[in-house]
Image (cartoon, rainbow, N blue to C red):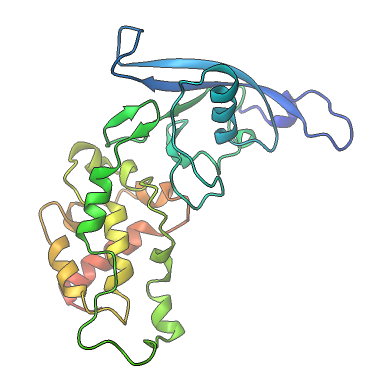
Length: 255
């Protein structure tokens, strides 16, 4: 049975935020580890509070117990995408995941996202991910002369691709994809989502080029529709739906 914060936290005075003990198990990695192996589990027991998130726990470990712990983070408001990691076996943003929403009666496991080379601890090499992103040309492509006024777009035209504008390039979707785990050459969901954002933009003239790029053996047809990507997206993007729409556009040339 999952322990709730109310069941594990000591009684607190009115107005106080209840505290609780939690164990964080971090998968550490260093090519020069003194443990005799490049990766190992490291445990820390912490006193945390009901408003704390996994990122707060990692900060506490780094600032108070082990300064060598390495991870990425930036704004801590769930929109920069830099602190994506596997938490209890699922891809999440550490800054959005409340500790109290996890099973705090058991150790909370924190690992780097899968499918990308680990540099140190929770930091992975994002270059393969961004290489695919750059390849789909994630920018507006127009033909002809510069417009003399703004490019008008109706609310209905915007709505067609509105969902895929929410991507924050955290790689949570791509690194949750079994195809990407086994074949690092696959473009991956995030690249396809960002292609979708421009393919269906009525102001863009580069849809045909992007579809040709994705019509590759490592392109959109590698998707096996497992929905891992949609479940992993911290922004709630319907990733699998977007991929299917790109497939349909490739067949029908309707965009």
